[in-house]
Image (cartoon, rainbow, N blue to C red; front, side):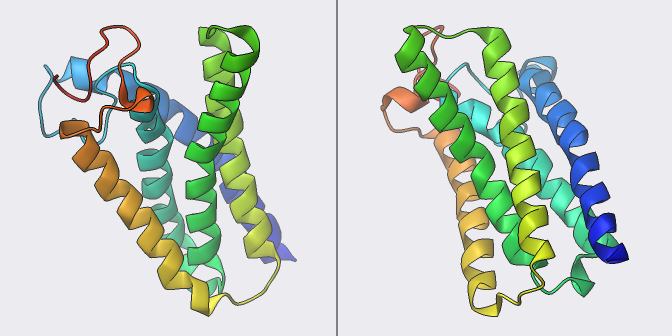
Length: 179
């Protein structure tokens, strides 16, 4: 029981840390003079897809810290964190496009709230999966591979994005780091 409350504290602490780190990543590319080495990790434009990196990279780093702190001793850690990390961008996309369809436009304050909800959902999903006490060995590599593949896609599509609406900068109409 003490271990579960420790996990909960870690996951709850992760919410503001990931939120603040992700919010900072929104501006890092510009702050670094549009340096290409920063581009895979920070938003390079105002496309929906670029904003998904804002939750992804801080949550991956936070999961690595958690792994060092307690993850090695937690049987379902890798699967739980993989699911949590994958839920975050999924929540952002579903909630953003859902409300945009209903309202016909986007609202910055609602975008920020959606980001917070997505981070919270991912962190709480990870906690709930860890709390089951079930071992998920057959899913570990699938979860880790999915997270790694998403990270590669974030990096690759920053420089070579498909010309799809989710990749289009809502301000300039361009795609990726440069059109």
